[in-house]
View 1 (cartoon, rainbow over the protein chains, first blue to last red):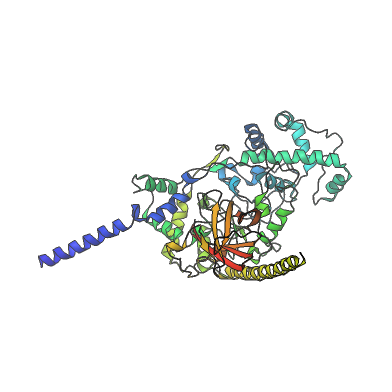
View 2 (cartoon, each protein chain N blue to C red; view 1 turned 45 degrees about the horizontal axis):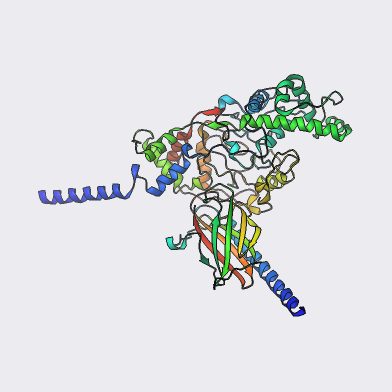
Length: 410
Length: 160
């Protein structure tokens, strides 16, 4: 009897040793450890240059951009700034389903951190630089609601010295009305048509430079370290990882890089490949039909401020535009995969804030309903309720600070 | 002189036809990729010996190609790749029409960009620009080559 117990004990111990040896640290295989390392913030490449923006890494431009970012005079009613929706104390978003500027938009506010690394901006990627993106809301009738002439006047009135140190002399705006621009508002549009070509160019140049200063500020808004990063750092540096994540969080991480297939879109240090996907998220019934990337891909090619435009400082080719995918049915109602860093603090979710909680998001991915328009790329995951809770627990480990003023490009 | 021109014309016609057929074949593949969708297609990863930048022989044995990325291939980055195309006997293939397709067989999606040949250096060397792989893992990178030896497809298996 004693011998049998001894034999069983030896077999169990040997099996345990074999298991530990087969898997690496923390029970991860070497391939999984490599994947965790690739998702860690420590693996983030230095900030890339922005060839379209000559002042992208000029600290004076970043400081001007920081001040413009919070200036409500850059709006038709004097009450809306970039920071109205991109609130610095909430990770540069607003926590509501559809953003509110001078009116209500058709989209959820996107967070800014890490966006300097994305080739395309907005949910549908209709802009190809941070500065071109920043100009969109300024002329939107439901966001800032103003005109480029108004913004040029605000800069001339209040920021002339700082502006001129960076961009050179301001144009003479004495004959330019305060409200004029190629916008929906009829009066402003007709005032814009009445201006000479030179006047329009003068105003547009100031407008573009506002965007470039805003971009210089925004591109250095970066994610801080999360508990997941600490766990990954401990695993890959040989320190003990015990106690950094709970068992449920680790189980969720296993699902995240495994059966739940999350890394197909949410990979790399920012937990996004910055590509566009139709995941069958139901459109908001009250909104106009929105085809997502299908229209965004076409729009960016003809955008007044894209990389190929006369307002861009790029001297090299615009590869992102040159090799862009357009017209494919896979783009229909496809939206940009956002970063999952700080996702727990960023409800509601999706392009129109359709889901109120992370649990609702995970339930959607688990069920994978058909798309209302186009084809959903999802297939049912068939995860158990406990596994969905573990995934959610893991997503909550991705929270960290958001740092404005991270290192500039080298 | 006239004979040479005639040969050239028929060759151009045949090449154009081959390119057209392959373009249809490639677009069909791209579409079926899209229809298969994310989340496991059951495609089996090839043996380790099937991976790499080549030299790799085309399906019909007409061509042998080798890839040479300008920088090591890395997920989420725009890449430039040089490809050298030779026939089975090692002769350089110039003036070939090369179209590019690819994707992740296990996930059922294609390339996120539309890469294409942007330069022909001669001596069978071509430059492909606009290549991006949007995640790590097993990717297929396919070259449909229409050249003096006919039309053929080379599939590279890459591990990002």
